Length: 130
Image 1 (cartoon, rainbow, N blue to C red):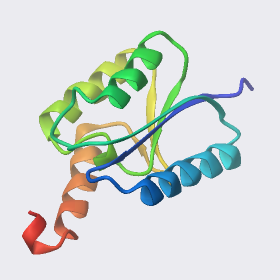
Image 2 (cartoon, one colour):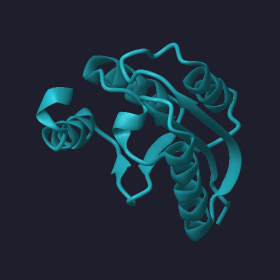
Image 3 (cartoon, rainbow, N blue to C red):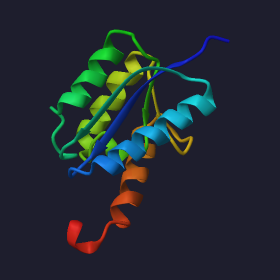
Image 4 (tube, one colour):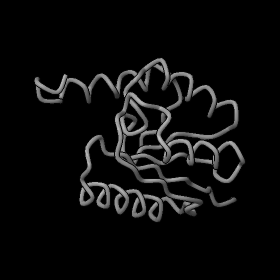
């Protein structure tokens, strides 16, 4: 069986170097446990509503160039918080045979799975963040 190549993408909404590093370490550990080779890592701070972030652009360029088979994130909201844009991204990745895998082992294949995860995360946010 061929080893899967993962591109790791980390994002925090607000500058927090410690949390960003912990997220990166979590993804590196998970990639190792799953036997993924790490094709690249992008880590950044930025709004989940802005999909023109440099790190996300870097990750998508690498995936589009065939450098990885898996986009590894800690959770779907790390990609972004816009369900329509996430839906388009999910379809774009699916057309290329690329999977989104979360560090908890979840593999997102459908928009409804993505929506369910984002909705659960939204409901756990403190009220003032909504």
